Length: 238
Image 1 (tube, helix red, strand yellow):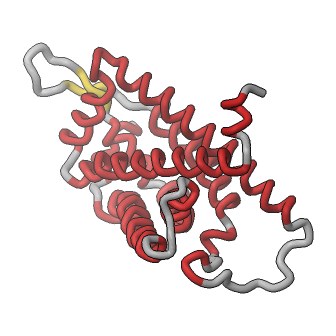
Image 2 (cartoon, rainbow, N blue to C red; image 1 turned 120 degrees about the vertical axis):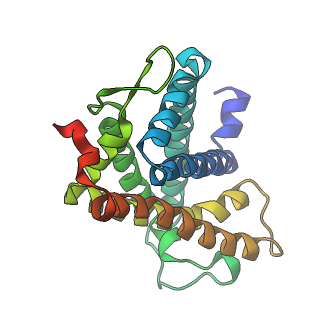
Image 3 (tube, rainbow, N blue to C red; image 1 turned 180 degrees about the horizontal axis):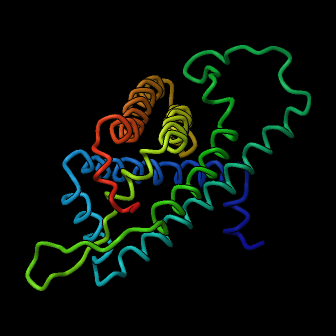
């Protein structure tokens, strides 16, 4: 391997890649939630928001963003799995006792299940993309000069979340996301060499708060659609 490859695939390099890509994905989750919250405003605003992203830079923005996200996602998965396997190989017999490590690095459910919550989130992401990027979405007239049409993504969302398995499956997935982010947020800073005894306790607490807020922000959407939105908004299914 080249010098760069050797550095990146060293123990420190893999942790650095995991932390850097983890923070990038965390930022994406925040932006994605902000966009999704337009669902509370109504169909027109959400559909035009989605249409804006799809047409930005003559449609090139969405393709570049998707390639970038897929690349970051794959690097995060490969590096994260490699780091986990390194830890398992270093402790082939496992821990003699299940106890906290002490201090800010105290072991939690979130930290000890990162690879499993990561696998669940990978499966969820694939299902999510298939459902909402490639699902049926009829074209509706935009209230603009020229009669430009936009996809009724709002109708697809309502139709999907009116189905109990999908709605509550998403709720469960968002709880898993919260567990993953709780540990992932602060440990990313540690992996980048930015954590220390002074700042790590703050990052741990901030990670917990942000994980709860993000998980709640996402899981309240399917519950809102399932219990409160008029099924007529899902005319896309007809």
